Image 1 (cartoon, rainbow, N blue to C red):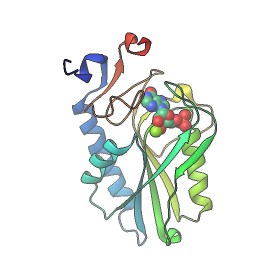
Image 2 (image 1 turned 60 degrees about the vertical axis):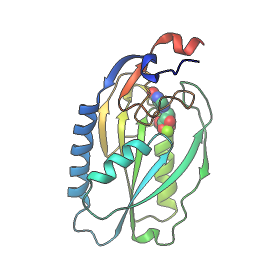
Image 3 (image 1 turned 45 degrees about the horizontal axis):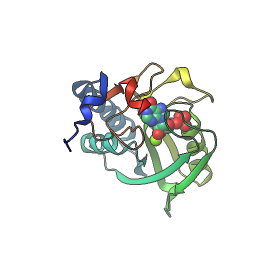
Image 4 (image 1 turned 90 degrees about the horizontal axis):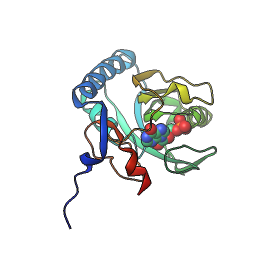
Amino acid sequence: MAIKNIKDDIEKILIGEERIEEIVGRISAQIDEYYKDRGSRLLLLGILKGSVVFMGDLMKKITVPVEIDFMKVSTYGSGTTSGGSINILLDLYRKDLPNTDILIVEDIIDSGKTLSYLVEYLKLKGAKSVRTCTLLDKPERREVDFEADWVGAVIPNEFVVGYGLDYDEKYRALPFVGVLKPEVYNI
Ligand code: IMP
Ligand code: MG
């Protein structure tokens, strides 16, 4: 069997590697500026699995001291639409939340349900502060009122893959964000 190149399934690149580098540089500088001179601990909280590539690049550029952790949530629904209710599959266990500033790192905001739920949840758990940053934002798809504190790029209402984002668990390893060829969905 021939080895398949995942790049062959991409119709167009939406956010290329250079643009991603710019985004990571800009957001990490803004995070450094915002969280400098704080006595509390800063926790980068990645939402599995989509955020891992962005999180890895971002944490290398941030210069203020950070700790990392991960949560995993499922939004019921599959394929190219995100679903309704949110289920916590991997929770955050941490003793000193009242002394922790949490920065949630997300791949993309679609309906807004995941992040609006998580922000409230982590505040209720007692975090000192909860802020959010996302690589991508699709504001046209919003179902609940939610805005991230730091946004990498606003994109149109198209399903995207790469740089952590998947379709059916594939394409996460692509170094850019792109749109799949239509025939990929029909096989
Ligand atoms: P929300 O709760 O509707 O904002 O859903 C956000 C989640 O849906 C993201 O963390 C992604 O896992 C998934 N998602 C939304 N849009 C896309 C997309 O275009 N490509 C891949 N995953 C997406
Ligand atoms: Mg996700």
